[in-house]
Image (cartoon, rainbow, N blue to C red; front, side, top):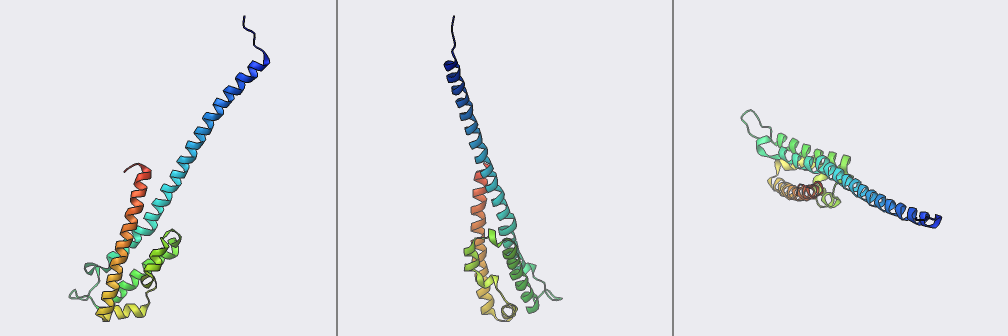
Length: 163
């Protein structure tokens, strides 16, 4: 007959508890990693939804097909000025509300757009050189925003598993 003494029972119990603890550690680690992944996904979705999508949408106002014109369809200087003011206002609104999510070098590189004044928008409407300058700046801005949006989208897809 097998005799079991207290030392053997204690040793066996310690081994079993160690194995159970090991599995709990592994499970807790997996849960923690999944929570971190979920937090990253939520942050990326918020960046895309609240920052980069509105920045790209703001540009659609400046397409000549979308500008308000006079009774024969010609874009008036006042209408052009108004659209540039709206564009600048939308950029400022995104910056105010979600600037903490925005890549700061975008604000620095395109500060001329973020801080467009009414006087500058009047000049855009009446001076073709200034308008061309702003249009080129806006074109570069939109390309930069698209690049960043695509980067965040790829990163999000990798995290979600769609990539």
